[in-house]
Length: 487
Image (cartoon, rainbow, N blue to C red; front, side, top):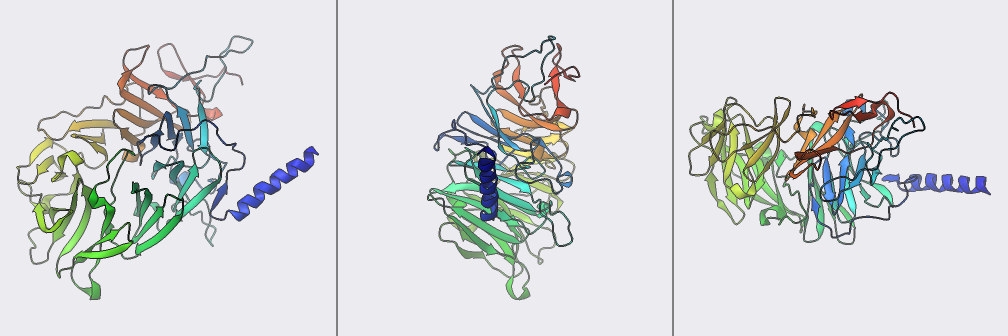
């Protein structure tokens, strides 16, 4: 009887894997009974950690795409997988330390954390991590583990999945990119009860919509898109601006004309309309902030400027408001960054030597005597967070003469700082990866609360270690390998 039941169980899982051709059934992971409510507030969408209710969902660790190979099948991954941990007042809860019969501390792969569980055993912590929660689903990106006809692993392509927060049902594949991950960008937000996933796959603009009845619709807007607005909304309480009910994008001028066409795709009607289509005008979409669309506009008849930066209001596309001007000419700008919604009609820009803050109809001010826009992590309120000197820095960009501040990362931690994507700023919280013996694991710090023991900023490891990375903390608070541990 036992063998018969085992055979039936294996057969059932195999059948589910074959039938669910768009994903992998979650065989082996029992359904979770304690879960956040459907309508609980979500904070931190679009990063390496996102919270719903009291549960924090996060990428356990980090792995380079080049190291993934063909191992990224559902159930094979733990280091860079998606986990959750329950927080109490922003803090993790810890189990009591256990000792063996000889009085030696036992190794605990969760570093004695309570209420930590794996949600998705696939790679989610890598160069293109994106976690979002809407309703009862978590949405994430992961490298493709399949091979092409030449047996080359397609790990540079991105798969976009979703799975239920309670681990029930299947791991549903929504989209696979056509291009390498370096040419793909994605965002998600909800409008009038419909969740939209917008993907710019090189030149293909895809919009995937999931309605209130959980029906999925995929729309290919165009396969000749140069650039597109990709609005970012981190929290479920954010009010979606009217301008972001549409996605703005550019295409080459028809009939080999000089310039580009700026269009708008209406998310609700799934129809595109043309906004600007003038000969010799080349538009590049920067993005949206507040109720403004930002773009550059260049004309070959004005060769003295490579591109002027403009903003237009949602209800007045005839009035282009110029943003950039002296003391740095437009063609001297090497990079720019939109600011927060509270500071609309403004940009940050650099000439490669200094970084400036510029409002429309106001003088530019120097905020840094270096280029700080190369690795921007986030812009929140009047603070810009960016990576420099191997750590996370913050700076108030609305005033001149500010000094960079890197106190968000505790001095005891050395974060993995080679790319901005390895940091996630969510209000007062910062998430980042720290290297252990072999792998990187998630840590977080919250400047709004204090550690009960040290009375300093609260920070903590969160994750589940593999055996090679088992570590403990010595009396000085330093992480050291425990070579005497037992299971």
